[in-house]
Length: 270
Image 1 (cartoon, rainbow, N blue to C red):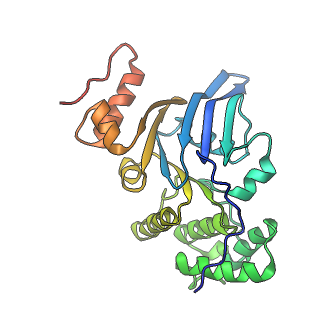
Image 2 (cartoon, helix red, strand yellow):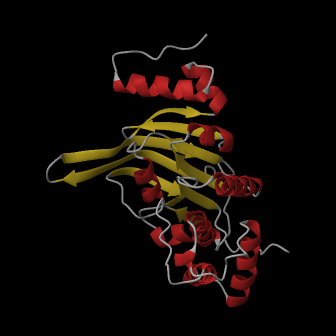
């Protein structure tokens, strides 16, 4: 099938995602101020699969929600393709696709109806919606259930519907929050293959995960986040070399242990 031409014009800004001193404080009546992000700064060039690796509660979802224009930062700036996400949310949404941990799909629609509905929200013309939808159904192997009511689909099938509606407008930047969470091994493999396909198309992908092997397998670069702070950033090989450890898992836990006990230095490996 001939690919549908991209509707989004990429301005080739470098970097594609730039975050400076990003801080988010939530106010809780009982617990007081909760600092979900604390001075995060990151630069992500175009065409990169970038992993945000950290345990649950580290600040990964808050970070992605700010980039997706769902939350406003308490301090700092975040830009996608050179555009400030807080000041230009409508423009940002045309250039970005966001998939949250909650698939949020409507159970009474079919998979096709769900995907086409989001295409209409993005203002795509009818003829482009049809061809682009078929291209995505091919890519994600959805033809067997594209006309099935979503309420009758398995969790893996719903995840594919969520991905399809996220990419229907062919955005240059994709934000995935735990894309393979709670999926069986076959569906998780399909999701990994999809991310590899996006990499070959020079899309910029930021994905959050707490699965170390997933981050190492999929990502060009990784930032390890804990308690709202970036502990280290680099390629998996750079992190292992600078932090120490034969594996990324070992380096990860060295960084987390050092963050939990600030008086102790991280010992570099041999």
